[in-house]
Length: 456
Image (cartoon, rainbow, N blue to C red):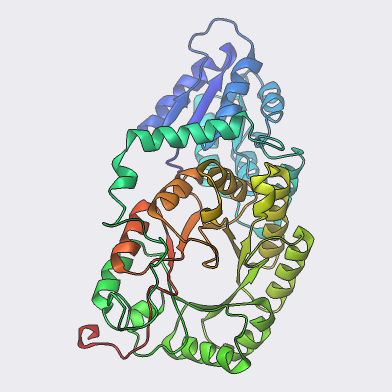
């Protein structure tokens, strides 16, 4: 069952059943936001249905449950709120369908037609069911597109401002959340945090100090690190965490072949390349468990969304299983959220149709805090799988503060990848503590020599 906050609301007709559901959820440890009504006195269901729907749309609650006499009117009200997908359920089967096929984030119930036992079974089923099938997710994205614009329209609307205020409150209540994560001397990702040779290395790479890296990655089982050409002697338990990357424009066919050979030899989880190299990588890695990732709209993000989607479909058709896209940064900074949302959504659909995962690069060094939050929320609403700090090719990389903000902005429901300027185990641990679920550190964790004695 979900452990994130659930908003509940009802009119007088659903008051008693709402109380029973509140007790039921609280007994199971589910955080509840009770938005009323708080008495059986006659009231108007649109008032309370709107409260619950807006709580979900603004991010105050992950899901919402609204109860009135029949469940129909409240469903109509909720679906007027952009960002809400409300479904009415009258048995367990329709509750499962609403979640599995339609990804309903609001459930409406008719107290006049359900007893307590039936209602609790419906709620338990709905909360335990997820929308995971690609064709369903594609259709849900089409539903969301009918809103005409993500909440906030073409600018920073009230719901986006509410989210920013919420995150500001979280950080204000926890002043040590950011300050305690920053390494002495400044933030990770600051200019100059670049390791170019082993003589300059802090000896926190998988070859030179595998125990330090094991300690680093132990904090997050989904974490990955990044390596470059020329690796050797990587312990097997660390190899499976490494995204082996080569995005230089001057990369030759021989370089790509070497990248794949190293990935095959050491069992790296993926290679990450430019789109033109996807077929070559797929052929080189045939028969292995190494997946191919490619970048789209990279590194500027300033191409038409149709071109990004075309790039994505071709890459996925040719064998890519992960796609890293760069958002339309100029549109975001112009306040044109519709364009940013449509850009991500189209690429998300293209990736998921082919069974690939999407990471959205927002280039934090170029954004204000408000813009970072908006970019993350748009990525979440467009069904991305990860948000990522940076390309590594702009004026700055990941900072722990940005990672913390991004993790809060997506309610810790998407992966957060910190990339650029992560050069040591301390930097990486700070990023993970801030909320990162993957680490990209191609210039920081430089793997160039045989494993030291500590690898054994």
